[in-house]
Length: 164
Image (tube, rainbow, N blue to C red; front, side, top):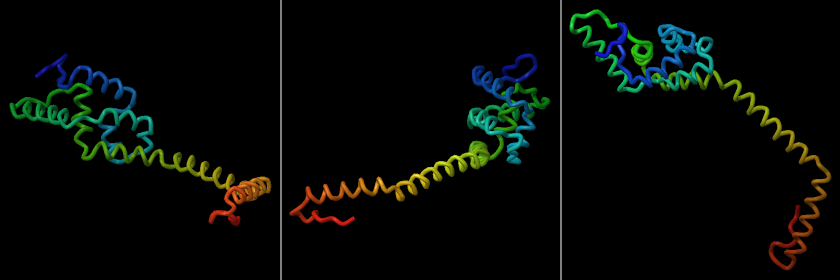
């Protein structure tokens, strides 16, 4: 097993380093992350933290590698190995059922009110524009001129003499 200063390092060095950087910014321990994810804690898991966690979701191969290595270490009668931060994250958080979907759901829920507010503002702008167009005498006169011009151009055809 690849060991470095007493900790077990199983993941690709670049991937482990990227995970460590993202996880350090979380300002939560791995067990705290696990509890927050399982509890769908939106206070602890802000939209920013959820976006970061979505980038960290371990692959099935990474989970299998870490869990099988730990299992073989224990089967050999050894103590549980000391894991690096990335490996610890894969072991603790990667084992959460449907992790990707769970994180996406919490992320969607945390953004929903803000997205709804933005859509409401857009809908109100469209409603006001419709009211303005419906009540505009200048627009009604312009459309009347267009209708008369169309009727003149279409005179003598079945499209002539349109009403409006």
